[in-house]
Image (cartoon, rainbow, N blue to C red; front, top):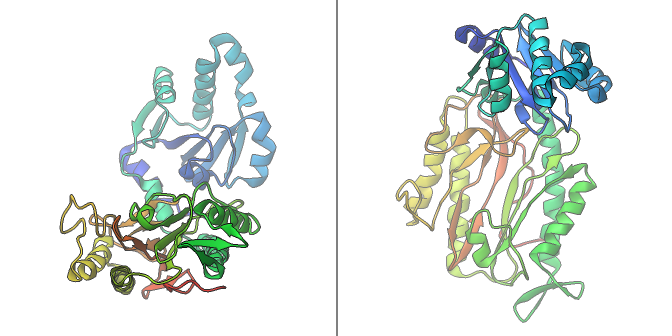
Length: 393
């Protein structure tokens, strides 16, 4: 995948640093993005003079040469890593190896991300390498604008997400109500059971997730409560699924809210207001508009209906108590944001739109789609119906 790193090169030139260095494993999304490589152990990625160079262990060397999007891949053994460790100990030996790698590429000063290990930074300084923190987060800014290939990866994950949501919705739709509790195939239908079926459906489509939200009643009034226990009839049930593709590592994200049975008048009203806010926010998305403006559009609808938001009351504990959306890519939460401080949207930004209204006395409502900003407006990457009443899909 071709990545435009010109903004990073400009930032390095402005700062006077010879290169940009990341020291982490591939769970750091900046590391994976820059290197195009995925390894469970720490390795180093250096960006300098318009090229990307890797320093990896011998264990990862062969695979890195085949998979990484780098101009060169070096082994620690190329810099006598074992000998350095034997002479100076594991930490200083590794630092001296890294310093030799930097010197090999003519790098005497590096800019590093804010998450850069303090021990590595101090060690490099002791070896005469100048280390400064790149505080702007320029790699995150680059990552926020997705290529067509990246958008395709997100779309693929979202298709798997939709299949999992369809299974969850069908479980609710097909359930029987016994003494106010949902039953399926003769067993109580719990949050845990629906979550398990969601996870199985995702695995069958090459995706996985560490958590999902199936939250009923008061549980759904806490936006990040995962939910637990039996699912009840006539209560709002929030289902929020945010899987990651096991091969591409790109996320999807979608939320729907259902009631199996008859919702209260207030629950139905909150759902309708949330959907209006969702549609108002969507209509605002286009390049040049700020994420703050999109958030304001959602708040205008919710406040106009008489509910609190954090904009109207920063201490509010009920109502609309989070931002309208966030970027999605190699991380489930990345730039840009649709929030009071949301920056200007650009074509290629992939963002969620997810207003909600929450109150333990009523439950929670949230509706969320995933969209990509285009030159003309936006394209919705989510192809899933919005309905309060669950239906078998």
